[in-house]
Length: 435
Image (cartoon, rainbow, N blue to C red; front, side):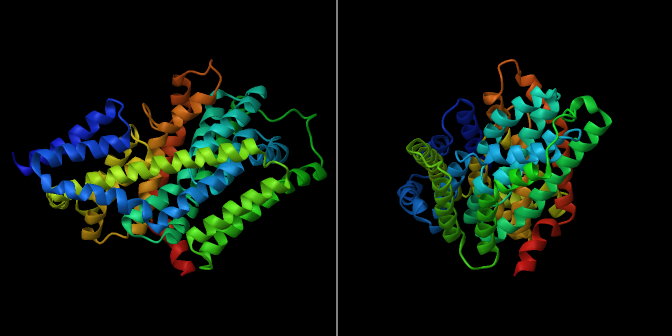
């Protein structure tokens, strides 16, 4: 059997197994072991090393620490406090609650590093409030889904940590590279909501005139979240300033979140238990996927398939831009059926040799990669954010309602991806300036 056919079957068998519902880690590892047994038994020697060496990488220390920080913040009441602040500040304008939801999700993204917390939390807080004030479902659901997806891009982004580990790119630089694209997307979402609700006021009615708040009430609501804003600024600031490594900053952030919860009387045994369980489950899932992907790629290289894939891609017409567009399309399609961590761990080692051969900046490519994953999050039929938000919405909201709500936001994401593609300085300017 030729190497071309073996390589094609290697991918086909993997996706067939994943479509059958087998966990991603076991699908990756099981496919690799099966092909090694048949075609290259000596490659099985690399399997034990994946289990031994992968979890001990020092970069991975940041993952549970940032996840623990995010879990504590999720149970701390910051989402409720932040939403109350935007409710009082901009609820009086058309679409204000939806715009505020995007802004709260942006803040939430900066303390969790992943997408589920903001999506599920704001689905439970913001959606009932917007429905009570007669917001259209499409605006209400779309703002929550799009805002929640920002967790993958805005630092401390866990997907960036995994990409940096595999692509051998500075985690601090990647965090900086995610700032401007993340804020740009949040701004685009807010502008879109504001303009559309201005043109069609029925989609996002302003709060009743009698629900006006004094300056003192508004200031008090904003000051209610200052400890968390300071925590975010310090954690990211010590990374940007080169004062601490991402791992040290993650430890500081976790300790800070612990102290803030304790000071505000939110640190109950139940909150601590739930935070630790959530951190353990997500960290364990990430490590298993990383081990499975390492085994899969070790066998892939042993078969000679990586060299074949690199030569095949580089020989395609269209030059570097055509190859980049093809890789972006592959990531988008995979995002409809796989979670972000699995995509990063599978595609990064496959694509980075090609990126290096083309002389493409891996920092810029990483930003394109993660923004593309955001698009996949909201793309039917299997965008993961769509299912997370459906799980917390009332039963009268159908999956069709969720699909229809995200359409305009997906268009905005594609537009933003195009801007980053055409103007690489959008993600790379801040990291280079700080250096």
